[in-house]
Length: 261
Image (cartoon, rainbow, N blue to C red; front, side, top):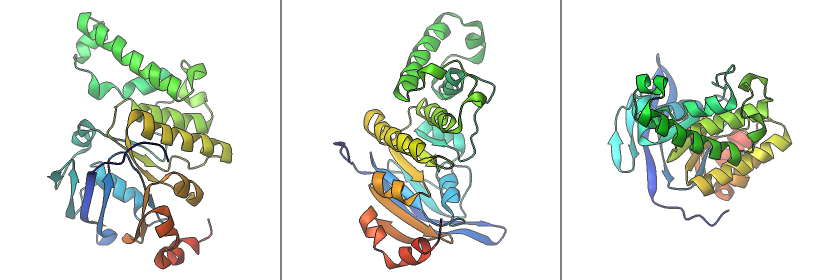
């Protein structure tokens, strides 16, 4: 692990329960995330991992429980409020604009940060133009950081999958998030792409100071890069602790490691 200092609890999930038409997706889940840590959520398919992320970023409203961010407790938050507070996420199924260039895709992540109205932006007028240049500079920094300079002008749809995932990460970083939610950032990747992505996740954590919450299926990756791991199975929490503690937890071994992936 890097030299970064893990701080106090930044995100506290308390007694979250979520049902869809009588079917329980999550039952009484509680866990917390500390500032600057890499916190993994793992579990077999259908365990409720994506539902949990969707509760954190305001897409789903849980029937019970609350989520606190930096000490402020929310019963209900919408996605925009969550984003404005500094929580960004990437998606399992890439939600990129395939026809737009890498640069423009990452620029869309800056929209929350832009002060001038759309009209001024469209006319590139005075302050709006200055602001756009500052945002562009920040985006160029992300492009360098993610080592995709050679593809700045390429339409995203033409890039190989591993690089598209990197652009998705770049767009989330453009929001300058305090907390970054990564939904299966390695899904569909080969070994080499996974190694690259693991390195970028640790570097993001280090250089951008972002706290990271990630869902991941690859146990090797999780054990390598996480500070703490929470384990879900059928919407219930069955384990929580350091990678070593989780690895040796009987419930986890039964639920997870017995499952062939």
